[in-house]
Length: 209
Image 1 (cartoon, one colour):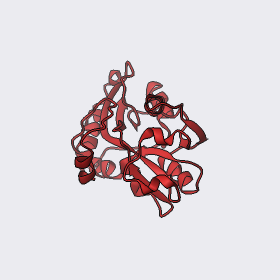
Image 2: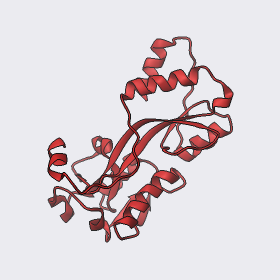
Image 3: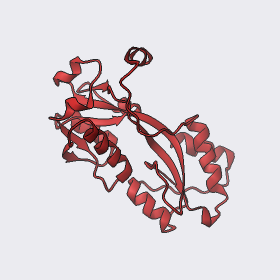
Image 4: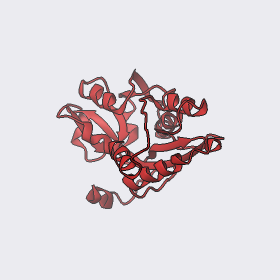
């Protein structure tokens, strides 16, 4: 966001921007109610009559306390997390994202045991570092890790939209499409993909990482 705002201010120096921090569910409600013009939040499905444009996508990795036996592995299968406590945010914060994780776990043969609910990825990784459980987080969030946390790629590939722009096109705010374009320019190319699982070409994937 700092890069998006900086670019917007340089391109439109007279534009007045007011920021508000909120979770995805609150942001969606604020857009629907007309309280804000544009939200950048975790959405990856259409919500009529709002417009949604994916900005960044990512794949999930597992965050582990450094003393877990699974840290000895190069990759972790979701099924190996069946007996672990999962640190996750409440479903109300981002229902579709939450459902993707739960569905992936069930496809792997188990229902996740969510023992601790948190409000952000940073807190999620922090709880993992304190030994409260394991987490499934976007790979870009590994930069928030510490010496108490180990990240491992999953055997399965689970792609998610991590940030999307959401707005009400009926309001005809001329600056909203411009802000979305700036966000896309800053983020770079984005390709949205359905949730997939791949057990092939492990060697090539390992070399890429």
